[in-house]
Length: 196
Image (cartoon, rainbow, N blue to C red; front, side, top):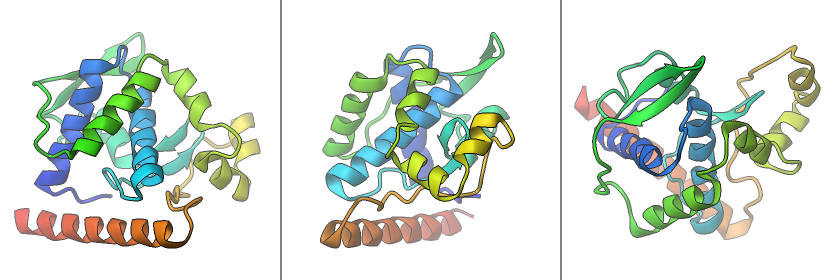
C-alpha cells in the first residue's frame, strides 16, 4: 500500500477532478487508464514521474491498486475530491469541488490537456485496448511473465507484476527518470510520516 503525503493526495485528487470536469462517462476503469497514460506521457516526454503511482499488470490493463481499492470501496483517500456512484453496475466518478492547479507545473497541465484531448472521449473498453497494444508497457510485462494466455482465457484477472516506466528509456534519460522517481518517493514518504 502506498503512503500518500497531503501534497500527493491533493495532486491525485485534483487530477481526478480535472478528469471528471473534462472526460465524459468517467468510470473507475477509465480513471485508471487515464492515470496510466498520464504517467507514461510524463516519463516519455520529460523523464520524470507525474504521480509516481505503482501500476500492476491486471487483465484489464495497468492498475494503480490503491486507487482501484479506494474508488471501489468509497474510501477515505479521495473522499474530499471525488465521489463514486454506481450506474448500471459500473462505478463512475464525479468531482466534489472545482479543479485547483496549485500542485501542478505548466508541463503537467499541458500533459493532462493533451491526454484528455486525445483519450478523454474514449470508452473504458477503448482505453483498455489502447494500453493492451502489442509493444506497450503493459503488454511487455504480461508477455514476459506468461500472463497473456491466462488473461485471455480468464484463469487470471490480476497479478502483482509492476510496470517499469523506465523501460524504453536509455542512457541519461533512464538515469534521470530513476533518480527523479527515487527523490519523489523519498519526499512523499518523509512528508507522509510528518503528517502522522
